[in-house]
Amino acid sequence: MSEASREANAAKECPVCTAMLGLVEKAAREYDRSAETDARVRLRRHARAAHGRDLPLPW
Image (cartoon, rainbow, N blue to C red; front, side, top):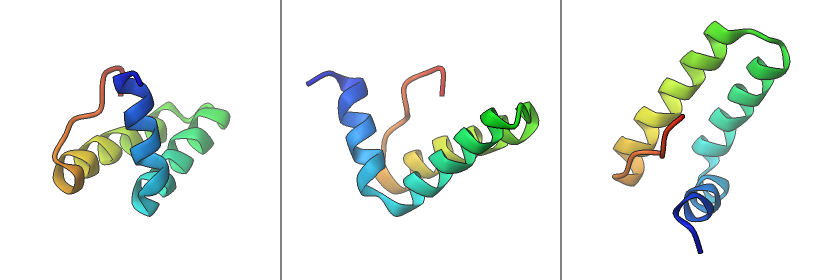
């Protein structure tokens, strides 16, 4: 399994990651780049704090 696949599976198992991914996707659908960037930053910070690892870029 690739690193990206492992990260995606970990995100699906965490309710906070799932909620933040939803915010990223919603902002992207609405073309709200500021909100999308904010959500991505919050997701990366959460992954680092709660899961002890960084998400691979471009996240």
